Length: 246
Image (cartoon, rainbow, N blue to C red; front, side, top):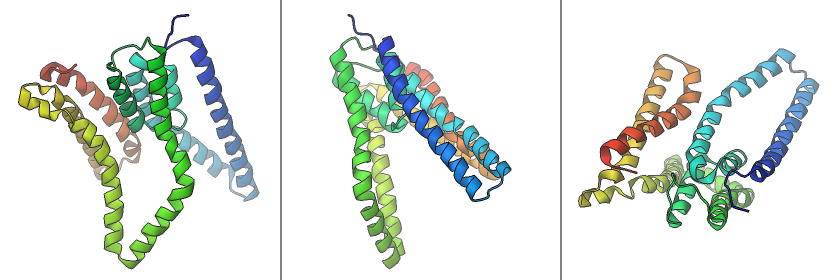
């Protein structure tokens, strides 16, 4: 049987896993509603909380959908749908898949026909993000405790450590963006495409933040991320045409 990234059996497997996750979500929702009733919380308050939470999950869901669409050309729909619906992260999964595709001599616009390549990419996308499940229970408490102690002794150093950790995380992704900028020296401007796309997304995010703050439009802050992602990806088209990217 010829391998197909969109084979129906993949949808069945992924659908079963996501159905289990949804079942857990409904289970805890009903438990929370039951507990709210025991605590005497008004039904209107509970309904308002549920409806507000449901509405504001649309924003991150749009960002996830963008990631699924971006990866669907090479990986099909089932695998990105699974990875970005359970424990996945759009900032990690897209980079991990891109690096794995590059290592296999392929690009995001190439549909995978080799099952060994597909499995390798699935492992790369899964193992890396799953490491958090192992380390968080054993490391997070000690790390937070250590940072709290430093902050209590010296508030300035506590802030420096927190900022350093955040910048370290961001630097990993910035390296991916700027890794091909040096090609400009050789006359290849395609390495500037990721930089321009990032700048476009940053500008959109800044504009949304400014408008939300000045005009006090609270809902805009929830949709700033998907808007910056979508417009950033859309800008990649003219930037590729202008700078000669692929």
